[in-house]
Length: 239
Image (tube, rainbow, N blue to C red; front, side, top):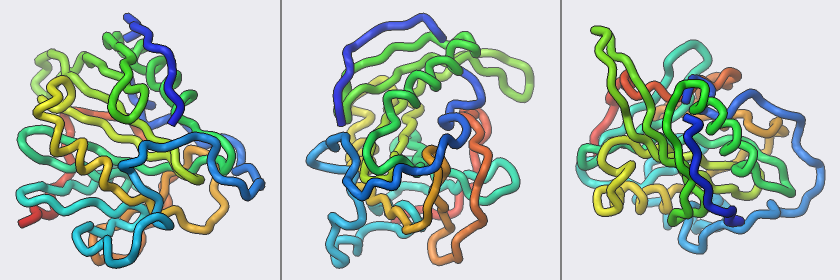
């Protein structure tokens, strides 16, 4: 993935943090994505041997490494099916979403700009930093709980462009700001395999997820943003 210059911003978050609405249809060129990925993952399904998936959990468009004690939450805040999966480990959370992307270019550059705009409208404090997977966004997001109490939540946005897909990760909890606390979840992020189906999809359309062992859920059209105070149901714990 191409690196971008570091910049700091006082722009500060909002509901379209998922990446905005879908854009124009995919480029018809058959060449691979023009962006380079880290050599140690995340991976495209074409790069992984079938027997290498024995220790991964099949969620449809994502195959996630199985780690002892890790909980999976399938996120479905509204109609339209499962939109994301959150992995809970060591007191921190990693939310994963996979999106369709053009064949010839990545979308993380423009997505970051959109995320920063939404964060700014929510009065969040933000900073772009050069991280392990390229440019990342660290944000301190104002939140209000059900009782009306206010505070802030720290989150870190990760992004990796792949061939016809984009993988976004959001770290929350100690892992958002502490490298040691993030180690296991970053290793999980690098071990994710993205399965891009053969369907023609416009850029930013979410790739379908499913509960392990279940049929593919209906396609999602609207992509809501991060809501740190509203967890989805815990469906499994890896042992």
